[in-house]
Length: 320
Image 1 (cartoon, rainbow, N blue to C red):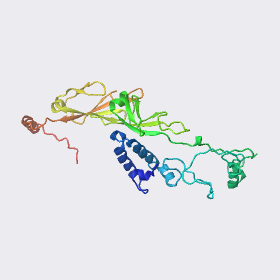
Image 2 (cartoon, one colour):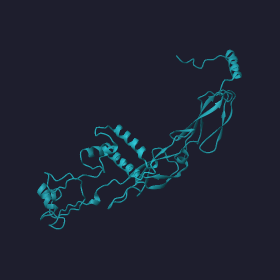
Image 3 (cartoon, helix red, strand yellow):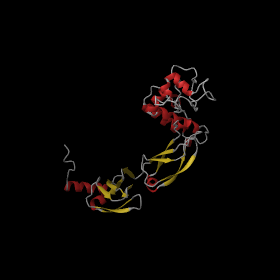
Image 4 (cartoon, helix red, strand yellow):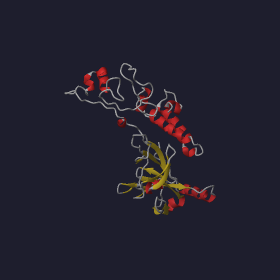
């Protein structure tokens, strides 16, 4: 894989914000959903994700800059102390080293224990100078190397889907598509893990698919923890005279009694009409907004002038 700085098009001196901005811009441009006729888009998008996982993570970026991991996040072979000529140039290949005589995979006439003896002394080869010494064996097994085969994707659901649950189709960076069941009551920022749906590599169990859920803005409701907020338009005469007004909820609409002389900005609480929480539901907080009729209305203006002259008042009297 190419250098992650080159993939994201940022200099090595770029700060975290610049890296994040570059990734978002390129991910939007090369997302497979936006390039359905481009067979290379999925590979390009996967490359962007891998690059961002390396230099978008502060600790991994330091490891990469120090040469401890490669562009795919895999550990690099740092070489033998003193620059042993037997060290391979370039990337690190996984092998199994076992102590014991000169057999296949041995080094010259001795085993790996002999190499440890020559570099660190017999105590190191015996496992840190344990009593008894003999029979200590060092093994390097590729199966023990940690590989990050997890895939991370984002998914946006509607507020109704978050509350009731849904089945959504998601496209992976690899180009593969899956149907994913969204459980009822999912919240923004929640992560759903699908075991074994990540990347694969020979000799390693498959990674997982991590889906980060976000909730799309709703045209009526705003989320406030487990509560919902709603601005309710009412007429001038409903505010003055009071009356019953139908209020939408995530379920069926309900009637709200507006008292006489209700000011704009007054909030009413409808119990249990919010989002699921624990064994119950949050509330729906309804705030009134007095709406005047569109256009000029001479009758209303004349009425207000008459009323103003007969009943003057100042709602801003407390202002300094």
